[in-house]
Image 1 (cartoon, one colour):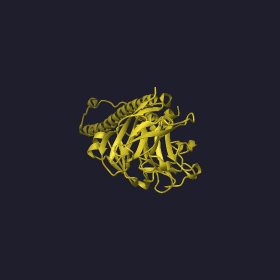
Image 2 (cartoon, rainbow, N blue to C red; image 1 turned 45 degrees about the vertical axis):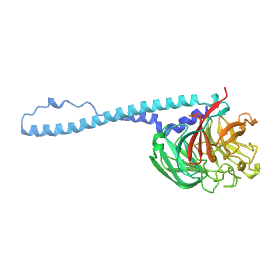
Image 3 (cartoon, rainbow, N blue to C red; image 1 turned 45 degrees about the horizontal axis):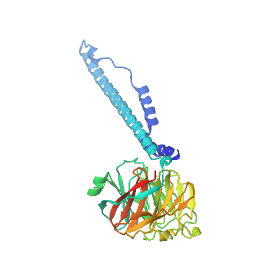
Image 4 (cartoon, rainbow, N blue to C red; image 1 turned 30 degrees about the vertical axis):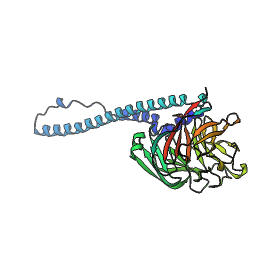
Length: 355
């Protein structure tokens, strides 16, 4: 239920159905009365002819105004219908991917290579809600900098045709950034702050930190690269994975309100080893999974913590780092795949869940 309500709130800036209806009513109230037919005006002398021309001119202007209003109303009605269909489609998608239908991962398939580009490390993703476009791809090269590239779809991405470049007001640390709805969430460079950046207005909305004891660049994945905060989205919403000294560097998972960045719930000390010893981690269906190695060609998902039950298991699920330098792994609940970046390659992994 939380995810459904959240979806509607995130979608409001794009759907604005109530505003459209109000505007239509306003236009109805302001539409002028019917105008007499110009052809019925009869001129009897020269002065009357002049007056007639003026009347015709005035009425032509009024008629043009009426026509403009009618066209505007038709456009708004059409857009309202489109937006209504869009929100219905999003609701159906959420129902199909709701946490009620979640289960644990059973198998991770062979990596599918989509593109070969950029540095050895970086991040790429699609928005799980698809609010700005279900096919859009966001791309962040390297684990430092302030540039984010947007591509219209996979074909444009493979062709290197950039639709838009965002210049962030604050640089980022690591490869754990994520797009969720209209926002990009990332760790502000060498700070404890989470930045919520609006991709529509291109402004920072707010900043917050996951825990007062968090120290920047102290604990991060074994490959390096300052991924001290790793953002993840699953069927229940937005998460940030991190660690701090109070738990000897073991993983913490905090679920955040994506609109306010306030903490909804936190689980700490939930990994078998320090964050600095693991390859990567992600959240899917409320379960936090950790990957043993980023560099071994064949490794495993060696630990799983279920936030719903508190159970801890070692699933031993086979995981392949084909190019032996996998620096980013995150789950997309809409597509039911993992996105990854393995030595210049942008990859997805198909997932198989338990029945």
